Structures are given as C-alpha cells and as structure tokens.
Length: 174
Image 1 (cartoon, rainbow, N blue to C red):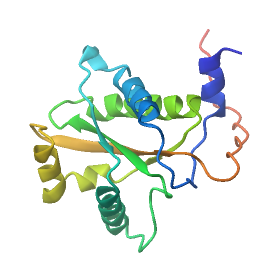
Image 2 (cartoon, rainbow, N blue to C red):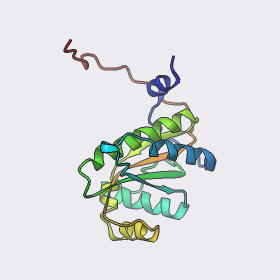
Image 3 (spheres, one colour):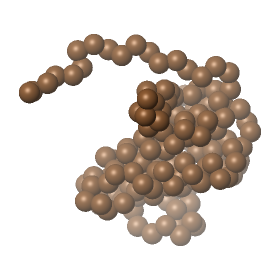
Image 4 (cartoon, rainbow, N blue to C red):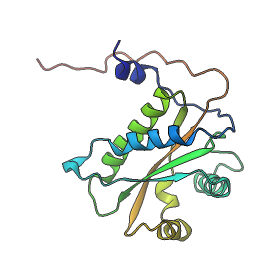
C-alpha cells in the first residue's frame, strides 16, 4: 500500500505521551510538513508557534483547562511539544487553511513514529492579552486567531487502534 495512504489509515489521536522531548530534527520535519499544507488561493497564511519551553507549555495547559472548565488536568496528555496553528483574522479561509496545516502536522508526526492529538481552545487563548503579547514578543505582527494545538511527542503505552468505519458515509453521483 502507498505509504501516504497507509499513514492516513493508521494515524490515531494519542492520549498518553512520554515526557521525553522528541529530536529537534523530527519536530522541524513535522513543522515543515505543516508549512506545505494546501491553502486557499495559495496564500500560505497560517503560522505555527512551536512551544518546547516547559514553563510556557505548562501555562498553556493551565489556561486551556480554565477556558474549557476542566479543572486541574493536562489537556495535552503529557506531550512535551505543542505546535499552535494560527490564521490571520482578516482571512476568510483561516480555519480551513489552518485545519489543513493541522492534518499535515499529525500525519507527519505519525510517519516519524511520533504521537499527536488536536486540542481545541487556541482561539480563546489567543484572544487573551498575554498570548497576543507572546506573538508580539516573537515578532508576529497583526491579528491572529488560534485554530488548534497539535500536541506532539512519543506515545506511551499501546498505540490506539482504529475504530470501525461507520457505514453509509459515501454517496456517489455517477
């Protein structure tokens, strides 16, 4: 079977990560795959904020839980890396383009033996003044909307199995 199709069939969301930091070359390869995602009108508008700083990662986790009302859990399931995808607020296709970036990140992670999961609430985080300031501190200009977090790392335990695919989801107009 074609390797890309195989990765699409096998990739699953991982909800248990080892604390070990993935190799920088692997994180960079995942990020590069995200940058090659299709985008409306070829705009390449989404950006990625790669969080490997432990303190910032913990702050993100705390704020993400507060937004979601989850109490004191780790919404990133112990993943040491969080890749945050953002789209320009004025771009009407920001969510679609950012979603394609997220898909590429997760498929690339799987192809490199890393686990990943999409975590929401980036939109609400990047409406907060401290995260707008983070972008400014990183040299990012303009207004951005958080699309999602790709939590990334080595998975702990068994890799999740695929659930059976639901029937009656394809309709052909031939």
